[in-house]
Length: 138
Image (cartoon, rainbow, N blue to C red; front, side):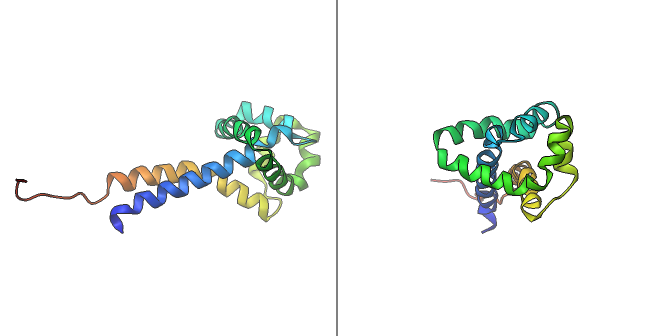
């Protein structure tokens, strides 16, 4: 089991990355504040910009995923739409410095999960038990 632990971390990394791509990719099409948050992410959050760039292609290919992502974003950011609309320049600051509900907390957790899981995957892969051959093969 210890030998394959890095594969579990890799699988979790892929799942979290796909979730972030689908959810953040739906952001530009969010009705009230999507453009403001996307513009703020371009200035302040390179990781969010990466998720938006990856996810917009995925969401364009499968519109049902865009609907899913928009629903998640609306429920997570719904309490902050008024504040973001007031001052769109600080949209990313508002998103990451306050927690509006449990869906927003989950979104922030999933935002940081892929970089940490990638690091864990690389660390576990480098530390995996290696097979040692005491006697040469015939």
